[in-house]
Image 1 (cartoon, rainbow, N blue to C red):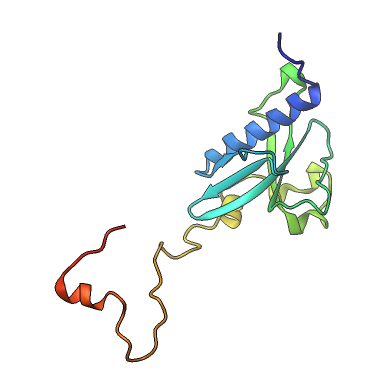
Image 2 (image 1 turned 135 degrees about the vertical axis):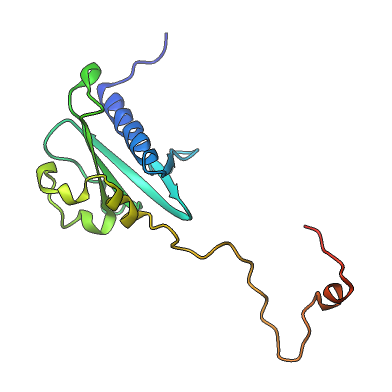
Length: 160
């Protein structure tokens, strides 16, 4: 026999898994952190990483995290149905930047601009936001040859 799972835990798990699946539809990988650090999910697309706090409800209003909580995006999940009769396909996900949470309505009917879409994903996870991975040349004083100048001249190659 296992430990019982509360209805609240089931509802929260539905929300977290739904956010992961919906983000994956837009090529955003999301997973829970190895340790419970207070963030529900860490999401990545291209080289953009975001911490996500998920709040799930079947009601018309969603909860928000405490203001002191550290996260980048609130994923407000509006579940359609209850317990074993949840329709995940009909349920909606809204992605709200932390700085927009305070001034936004708590009613799902008022926050359609935050509903998950390709545009919303591109706003939150911009592609090409960073240059390709490059190692910067060290700063040197004028007239000082680079440390590996002799290796370059002789054709020698270093190893990692």
